[in-house]
Amino acid sequence: MRILLVEDDLPLASALAEFLGAKGFVCERAASLQAARALLPLAHWGAVLLDWQLPDGEGLALLPLLRARLPEAAVIVLTARDQITDRIQGLDAGADDYLVKPYDPDELLARLRAVERRRSGAASALLQLPGLSIDLGRMAVQLDGQAVELTAKEWAVLRVLAQRPDRIHPRESLLDALYGLDADASSNTLEVFISNLRRKIGRERIQTLRGLGYKLNTAATGT
Image 1 (cartoon, rainbow, N blue to C red):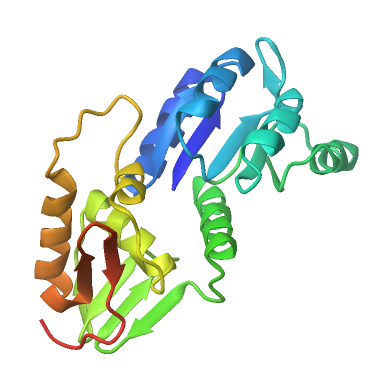
Image 2 (image 1 turned 90 degrees about the vertical axis):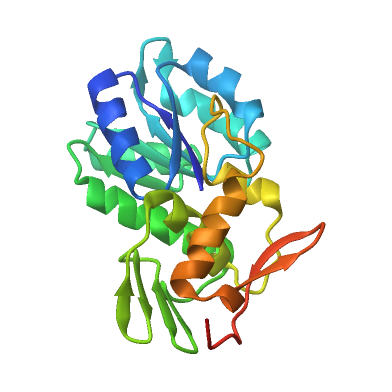
C-alpha cells in the first residue's frame, strides 16, 4: 500500500517513513498542505497520515480534496490535540481514524493493517493455504510449519497477493507496492522478487497470467 505522510516534523516523518518502509509499505512525505496537494495526483494512495498543524494551515483543510480525489483512501489524523471535541471535529471532517501524539508506531501499523483488511474484504489477517500460512498481522510466513524469512520488498509483493488471493494483480499495482515516486526501478526488478518468492514458498504458489498480471494460487501444495 502506498502511503502519503503529511507531517512537518522532519525527524518524526523520516523515522516513521523508515519504520513503515521496513514493514513493506511505500511512504512518501509532504511537509505542508501545498506539498501534499502537489503529490495527490501522482499516485494511487491507499492511506494518508495527516498531521493537524502544518506550516501553511490545518491538515483538516485537506480532507475535502482527499475525499474528492481519493474516495477509497483511509485518512488517519495524527495530532497532539487530545480533547474529545478535537476527535469529534476530525472524524466529522471526514477522517477515518485519529491517533494522538506521541503514539506507538506499532499501534499505527495495526491500524494500517486494519485499513488493508477492510479494503480487501478480508475477515482475518491470517490466510491459510495448503501447507502455507500467511499472517498479514504479524508479517509471518510458514511453509509446512517452518518459518520463511522474507525481505521487506518480498513481503510487500506477497502482502498484495495475499490480501486478495481471488484477484489478478496487474504488474503496475505490484510495482506501486514496491517503489516510491522517485525510484528508478529496472524493467525486470519485479520479476526478480517474484522469482525469489517462488523459490521460498513454492514455484506453483504464484501464477503468471501473461498480459494480465500475477495471482496467488490457493490450490497449490508443492514446490
